[in-house]
Image (cartoon, rainbow, N blue to C red):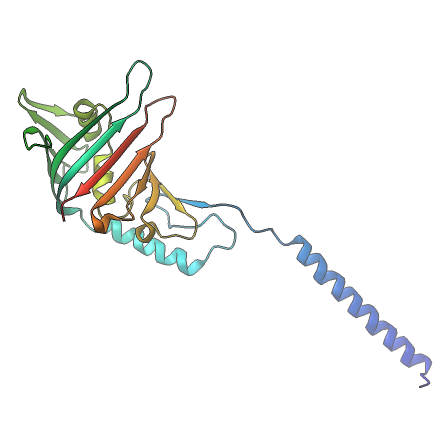
Length: 237
């Protein structure tokens, strides 16, 4: 087939244009960001749950943010009873230790009681607390055979009673299978902590995946500032 000069020029231009477009497409692919290796996302009570991966799913983030608002608006109310196991790691001059006790927990809105007893049923202590309506610090009181004593916080009270401060207010939410909405937490990327039951909060690695079967496990690893703690709750269902 014989082509005129004009036809040859046109074909050459088309071929050149196709080559330029192909090169541009390759360049855009080379510049595309690589998939992220991030395996967790961080959340606090004021922000929506957003994965740290670049390919964040907006629908999932919106749903998780809605879940967070539900946690924050729902009052903590309930009754729990069962057994508590606490193991404290060796730290400095302190040796490793462990204790087991029965407990009864009764919570309604911003006040509650925690009764602790030996495995045989002998009453050890009664903890009472109430959060003022003005939003001030929680008023906590410890009652033992030696009398009653007030504390500035539940953390200070549990430090005196158990030898280590426990995040008792956050644990009220853990018992419902999700993190406390007013504290920062982390969970595996792409997972809703209320569904998986696994998250990190207040320095504790929480496993609430079997809370429906009455099992809650939480562990705080040793740091230069404090010892390791393992807490296990077994609920009476």
